[in-house]
Amino acid sequence: QVNLVESGGGLVQAGGSLRLSCAASDSTFNFVAMAWYRQRPGTQREFVASIRVNGLTDYADSVKGRFTISRARAGNRVNLQMNDLNPEDTAVYYCSGTSPWGTSWGQGAQVTVSS
Image (tube, rainbow, N blue to C red; front, side, top):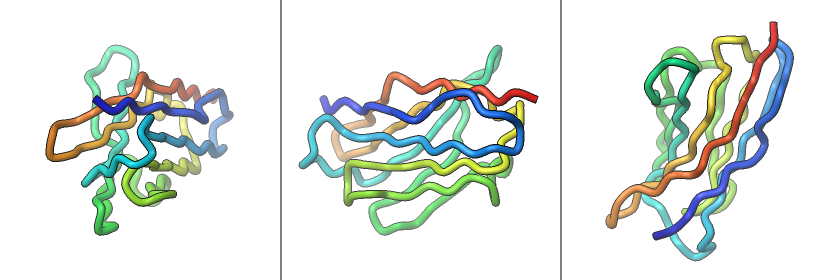
């Protein structure tokens, strides 16, 4: 199983920006798709954004126009640029990677947006 490690979380004021990164423990492993999910306090984990190996992206309606997902390196590294953050974006953000053998998850990165 390939591990994923998130970085870049933290505390930011409303209207600010943060950039999350996620990298696979095996630099040679290629995922067919990578994505970000988040879990806000008291809620279930929800989809945020995804990117396929062909570059096709998808976003939750709540983050469209504010968040941008990108792959820094083919197959095993993904970033999430988050702009114009608001307190409702406060959550633990999880990175996931999908391969023909299943889905791997990171441990999560806390993002806190103060009003």
